[in-house]
Amino acid sequence: MFKLKSLFIGAALAGMATTVPAGDAPFLQFGESEGWIVMIDTEKNSCLIEKSDGLGNVVQMGLTKDRSIGYVGVFTTAETDIKRDDTQAVLISLDGNLYVGEAKGMRGNITKGYSGGYVLSDDPQFVDDLARKHVMEVFPEKAYGFSVNLDGTYKAIEMARACNKELLG
Image (cartoon, rainbow, N blue to C red; front, side):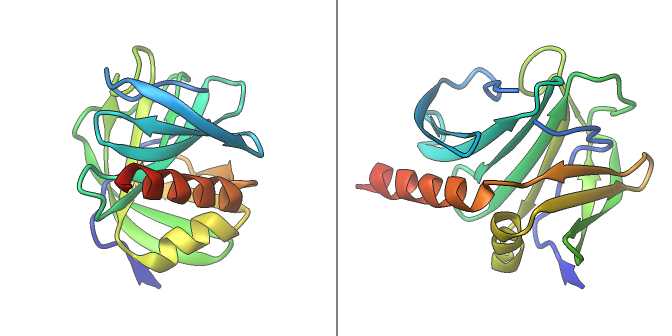
């Protein structure tokens, strides 16, 4: 079992992926790959990928502002019990590879009406699994588990890496 090094994930992240910008930061579209949109976060000077499922859910993956830690965020417009700053344990399975972390609830963090959160990790195996595995199953301590379809993440992450390399010049 792997341990996530720097951890936070939304408390009951009930869903998966709709193109919404995080916070008030402006985003520029860099490209698209297999349903994932690659965007430049001009506030962080970093690139991220995002995918929608058409049901009011969003998945985002990218780097923190200092680029030292990767994140995956899951948000939903569905009704949830997520409370801001609520903390709980979470288990993540990426096609059977297990990761343990700590959940921290977030509400209204990206666009009004959305709730969810992020998991942060500097574990290269976690990032590789996000890119190469097909399903991410999330089991929050206080809520029902859910699955996220990861189809197309490998090419999208590679495009985001190229985007980040271009930003660094």
